Each structure stands twice: as structure tokens, then as C-alpha cells.
Length: 598
Image (cartoon, rainbow, N blue to C red; front, side, top):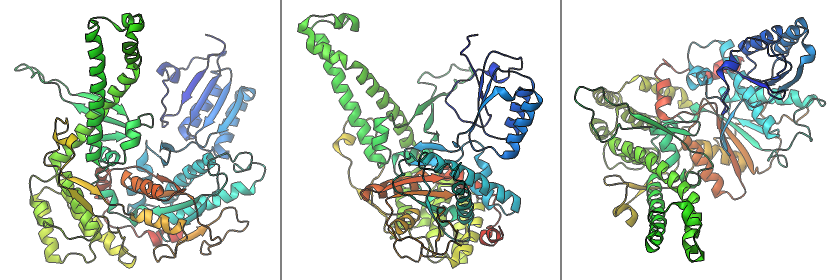
């Protein structure tokens, strides 16, 4: 093996886009002339494996990279193993990389993808949780947030509400940042290390709890990215689609053909996705059709030139060797790679948008979105809620439950017992599981003392007809789907951010605690020490977030010139994933009392 080769070893709970040979991971025979690079979480399992490799003298040198900071006790375990194996000089480097978070967008991050149930909404709110378990969950979140700010290279001003998980995270994060700044020799936020985009001005860090707004995670949406996440299999910017076996039916008695499963990456490299991911779905369908028409026109032009010159059967190599008389055709062919890439993206978004459209039509998602927007903006419904729930052709049981939960959460006055019994019967007849309703009822009663979330004058405006593109020769038959235009409005999380960034006095945020880790003496968080208008902010939702809130913050930052907002959450879930966490929570967890003990 070449002298400059090396072995890579990775922890079991690391998501990487690198290919590592399975035989390397399981290798037990010594390779004395090869160094090894480890990139792992500092878990007990991974530390034990490193110590075992040291004792077995497997490699020439060891470069240890830990995703989050390793504790002193675990570092001592490695040192003891190296000392016992006389391999101290072989451990060349030990790095704390502070990378325990995942950046999905330039302005969006999450803390966990694998093992996300450990810090999920259910984990935080379950009734049988012990103090030690809650402490471990909060420490996990704080460690990841500390990694985020070390990578960012900035010490934030922290604001949070009182009496919930967000407050505990804020207190612990303030303490961790303060302890690091106190050590002038080893601080991760010294001037030399501070090279992040926020280095010239400190950002505002707003911590909120998921229980602040329970309606938005259940809300049916109408923008492209949020719809893909809501109705398709979309994880870590990759969407998976199941395609049918094809037009040819299986022979009689033969085993049915398996469906093909295709995956597509929806990243910043995709210009169409970057431009339209926050657009209403009808606009996306029109844009895909326009791109397809443009591509076909360019393709037809190349074919026409070939036909005129009598070169229909010639290959591209022959065409490139033609004389100057073929300059026009040569120019057209030189753009062929760009044309093929455009065709790939068109096919990608045609398939994804078609799959989304199938869900919209079969479940009448446009109707649900319109009604939920009216409920959240306290507008008049043109059809009773009971009629929608009772309609067997309108959506799945889960869609009906989501609609009713939003009605129940946003109602100024809860329905009477007789009305609730009538709704419950209709939901049961529609095949709905009522356990989420039982939890939300207790949550509603528990939060009655607090100011109810205000969703503003959102609403939607329906248009009568789609444009010409959608009415003639379109690949997307939108017949029966409403063309809804969204009105700009701020969701509760966005409204809270606006109050705190602009230093507005508002009952919703006047009681928010304030922490400045750079202050020599910590305060109890009740004294506001600065009066500045922030231009940079990070919003983080403890308990989970969604693309609806993210897009609302993106729209807000675009409307405020010079403002930059980053959205983060402990986990990213869609409505289906969120509603499945709720039934197992038998009753609301009295978090304020529990957290005040910590």
C-alpha cells in the first residue's frame, strides 16, 4: 500500500457524503505503515473503539476528530489507553470540530437527523420524564447550539420566554458561552477566531418553544418546498418518488412488477429550485411549463438546422468539424451541455411537481389550505367545517384531523360540549384517531392563562383562471384546483422576532428574558441592558420546526431591507410526523413547574 494512503474511520451516527470501504471499518489486522483519520461523535461506543484500536496497535498514527467537544473524562480514557499501549507519540492530533448540526440552507439549520427522537417534541413533553432525562435533553441541545455559534464565530444576545424548555436552553447556553469567554487563553471567540459573517455586529438569538404555536406545524401549505416536505418523502434536501411499473401490465399469474424508486437532490445548485421553492404551487407549475416550452423551442431549432443542411443522421463529432458555413449550427451544438442540464432539471421538477399535484387533487389540499387560512385569520367560512369533515371525497382522516385541530386551537371560544360531541362523532365516522384532540384540549386549557397566538390577517385570494400557459397544452392539468394567491402575514414566531429585532414594546414579548454572555457579571435575565435595533438574527424553535415557519421568516427578511434571519430547530418535521408524536402524550406536561426546579 502506498505510503501516503490513510484509513478513515467514522462513527455510526454521522451523516457523510463519503464512501468508506466496509472492510476498512471492520479491519482488525494491524496496518503499521498507514495513518488513520477518525471523524466521530465522542460517544462511549466510539471512544471504546478508539481505545481498542490503540491497544491493538492497528495504525502508524492517529488523527482524532470529534464532531462535538469531547469531555475531559473521555479524553483521559483515550490517554490511558495510549499510555498502556505505549502509543502516546502515535496520537498526532486531537480536534474538536464543533460540527454537531446540519445546514440545510444558507439560512436554515437543524440539530439532529439520526436519533432525532432523543430531542423530539415527544421526548421533551412526555409526562413520565425524569429530571435527569430532561437535563440530558437540554444539555444535548445546548451542546449543538454551542457548536453552531463557534462555527459562526459570534457571541449572541439571547432572548427567550419564561417557564418552558426555551428558557432552560437559554440559561444553559448563556452559562456555557460565559465560561468559554472567561478563559482568555482558550476561548473559541477570540478576535483571531472570529471570522464569521456576523463578526462585525452581534446577532440576536431568539429561542422559542414549540408549544408557543401548535397550529402552524399542522397547517396545510401552498408553497413548493413546504408542499414537497408535507406530501412526499423529503429528507436532508433529497426527495424520493415511487414510479409506477410502466404501461405494460404484468402477465396473468406473474408476480407484479416492483415500483421504481427515484431520488432527486434539491439543493442550491438547482437554479429553478432556488428561485421557486418559496413560490405558490400554481406559479411553480406555470414556471415548469414555461421552461419546458423554452427547451422544446431550442431543441426544435437544432433539429431544423440539421434538417436544412441534410445532417439529420450525423453525429455531434462530425458536426463540429464542418466548415465556416455551419457556424450557426456549431454554435447551437456548443450549448448542448447546458441544454441537457436544463432538460435534466425540467424532468426533475416535472416529476416532483406532478407527484405533488396528484396529492393536491386526490386530497383537495387547496380546499384545506384555503379553509385553514380563513380559520387562522378569523375570516368567514363559505362552507361549514362539519360538511368538510363529513365529505368522504375530501382528504384523508389525517387531513380532517389537522383541519379540526387548527379550528380548535385558533378558536377564541372553544366549542360547546354538544358541538364538540358532534364534531367528534363526524371525525370518528371519517376514520380519525381522536387521541391528538384529547392532548390539544389539555394543551389549550393549560395555555388559557397565556395570550393566545395571533395569526394576523392572513387569508388567501382565489383567482378565477390560470394563465394561458396552464390552459393550453400544459403538462399540468390543473382543472379543479384553486389558484390561490397568498397574502403576506407574519406567523407568531416571525412576529416575536420582529418585536425583538426592532425593540418594540408588546405584551407578547415584554416579559422575555435577556442574556448577554459577554457581560462580566451575569444577570437574572430580567434586565434589558441594550437598546439597539438588530440587523442580524437567529430564530431557534425547541421542540421542532417546519418549512412553513422558515418560508415566513424568509419572506419577512426580504421585506426588511438589510435584515438577515437564520432559522433553526431541534428537528424538522412535517404535519404527519408531528401529529404522530402527539397521541402518546396522555396529558399536557406542566413544564413551567418542572423547569423552575432545574
